[in-house]
Length: 121
Length: 202
Image 1 (spheres, rainbow over the protein chains, first blue to last red):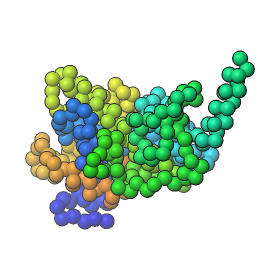
Image 2 (cartoon, rainbow over the protein chains, first blue to last red):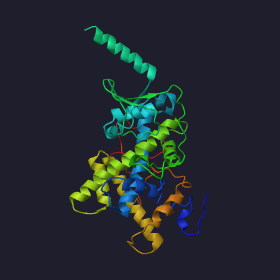
Image 3 (spheres, helix red, strand yellow):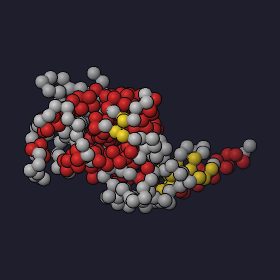
């Protein structure tokens, strides 16, 4: 446990540690600033975004875990995430970065089948 | 079916091709990609592209771990994936907030812009809990500096960063001072999990 003499609220066990953030704000700012046309961000906006990101991680993790095979296997996998992004409206914006993965051989097999079907016409 | 490189992909594995067409959007994976490369550093590089900046995976993984049932496991590629999703989420919110800001001829993105963006983009359920958090945050800062309403400078980011590895409290806990109700958000596929307090529509 890190102890710091600078501020009293560095004490983890203290219930008055109301800042209660588990993500580095400076990194969040970096990501925000990499958006085009963003000039400056005030402190509230930074804090809210950081906090919202925590909520988002929890939300995505739980939704994917419950939605996918997680409940049977008690685990969260990439495909649970990809499925959730496709099925849940809120997470639609993630579909581009969460493509469903298939094995090359399965893809080629499907391709063959499709070509056979086309050949029937 | 067109084979094309997915130029916007934030994946760091260059061997994955994006394949679009009748099958929807797929990515080829090799059979033994059980473990992808370790990305412990969080992805901050010198010549970074926008999509290469991530939050540290340890922090992200911890939040995930606290959110799912205690005995649950999380695949490594799932953690890395959420790490990327997080950057996407932040950019998503930020550009919406930025647009509104510009429309109103302002240069600084403020808290209202962020909350408005979330509401617009389907994260309405975060808004009320976030307002509560902001209130508590302001109170905490006020108490620390001893001056009401002081503007906190750059050092704030560093101060809070130190907390990240030592704070064991799940981020989802919301308590309203002096009130017995919990503000919760409920989504359709959401189920009550004892380890974390969730947010649901009141």
